[in-house]
Image 1 (cartoon, rainbow, N blue to C red):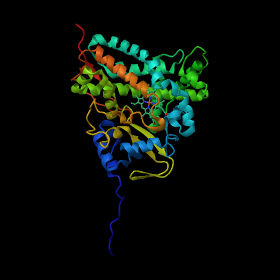
Image 2: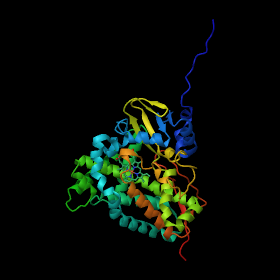
Image 3: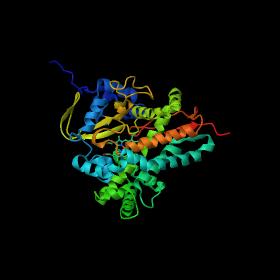
Image 4: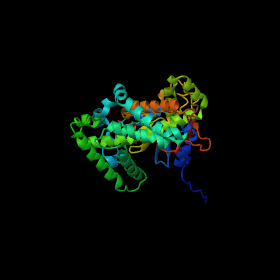
Length: 398
Ligand code: HEM
């Protein structure tokens, strides 16, 4: 009798995906994303228990087709803490929630409402730092600025930036626990209840000129509160990352920094290049509503489909020499750092304005701003990517 060897598990059709770890994607994802993009642009990652899309054209296909790739799924962790909002709805319901908040974030309205507040807050923070000649700019500058601007945007009556930050921390902890498969503690629910009460107080205050008041004319109170939480959730860590990453890129490339110092018009190019190379939000998640084909992959209904915005930003088919930081790159703005399609970041203009004012003021006011050579750093993180700390030095006024 012939003894046939037992077949054993069949090899994965996605060997690169099978070998990809979440730890390496958090640490330095770029080499792995480059080989995935080249060989398995839609790959199954067992560690993710989902698909990872790394090619820019396919990333856009996913994000623009909300009927096939939805955010509206019970696994979506933010909605488990704050309830349904524009971030977790699709179709007509999504439009109803989003439209109620859209007007204040249009380019002209953003500039008129926020520019002077951002300038004031930036100046205040830099004035406090200036005498020391050294600082850790992520926690002493970018973070507080992001919180102050979100606080201004929400316009909650009687609520300080410190309170908004404490709610944010508690809600983020609950969302992270749920994402990690743990039971969320009570702090997130308590913070959300307080935020909701502040939203109610603001909406019923005839003197409060807040975007929440105008939204309340179109949405119910619980819906206004959910979206207020999403504005807070969407606007703090991402903007902190956007500012810190842009600073890091410029300070790491003195030649490019010199170009920006010589021509302030290139600052926007530097910001877009930084978003392309290291988007503050590295991925967005979608869930397949039906069996479908995406590029070379067959996706099953219910599958998690994670879009790598970082992978898309370095797609060589669109961005030649994609790893290079080039403030004069003509098409840098084609990055997908603010997503694409119906969920394109509501406040992208605000985030850009904030980062532009922040960087311009730092470069103008802190002479010879440079990285601290004794404390090197690099972006880190699976979802939100930024340097854990950004230690810098500058020349103090004599
Ligand atoms: C003041 C700052 C910000 C606020 C208030 C804000 C707010 C929002 C809101 C409300 C949404 C949901 C839109 C929708 O679902 O229809 C959103 C989406 C998004 N935002 Fe922002 N955002 C800010 C800054 C940023 C920054 C700095 C980044 C990245 C660098 C970013 C990346 C994104 C992405 C990727 C999405 C899409 C999420 C998805 O498709 O699942 N945002 N943002």
